[in-house]
Length: 233
Ligand code: TIU
Image (cartoon, rainbow, N blue to C red; front, side):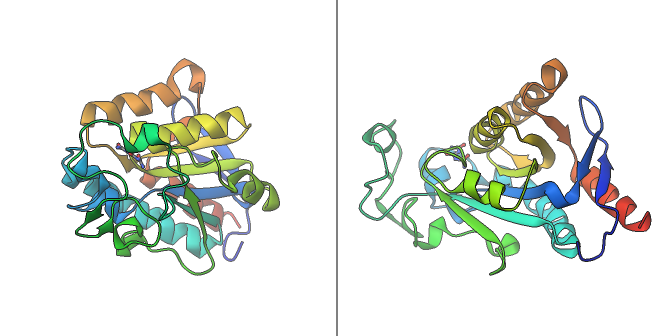
């Protein structure tokens, strides 16, 4: 790690504090894409108020900045499909009655299609060239992606997870990761949902029953733990 020579940090979390070896921890930022965050994208076509997600940007930005300072592995994910929709199941494309369907032309390009403006990550959290970007066709970051290979390659055992939306892609990814043996620590204010009650319950589901899927913390607690391990060095 660049600045932090004590590799272990203790994070205040629920249902209990957790010690993480930063060298075995990755920051995973889920789907902070224009398609979910901005008007005219996939999220809005589903009938959602996209302004509800803006609250997660600053907390994620502060953790991302600290992670970059300490040399932590950073992984960004993007939900989206190939231009020919060959990786988009009809059951997903045909679902519901959105104003525009996946693949239809919208104000930010074709909805939820790789390479289009709407599919890209918002400028505030844009990945550095050195960071990993995982393109995923589903809600979870493990299904039909190289996620497992990447985590194994870097010796990762713990995931600090944030992004959107809490109960959809964040929860799905945490459940997939938990079953694969990763400790998931979810940053509550670094997640957001179009439905405030789903955000709250999505976090409760993770930390219930002794942390059935993982731990829940805050951006402030992550920053504090990183800072403390730096000063202990
Ligand atoms: N609709 C919704 O809440 N979410 C998604 O479709 N994808 C993600 O959560 N990224």
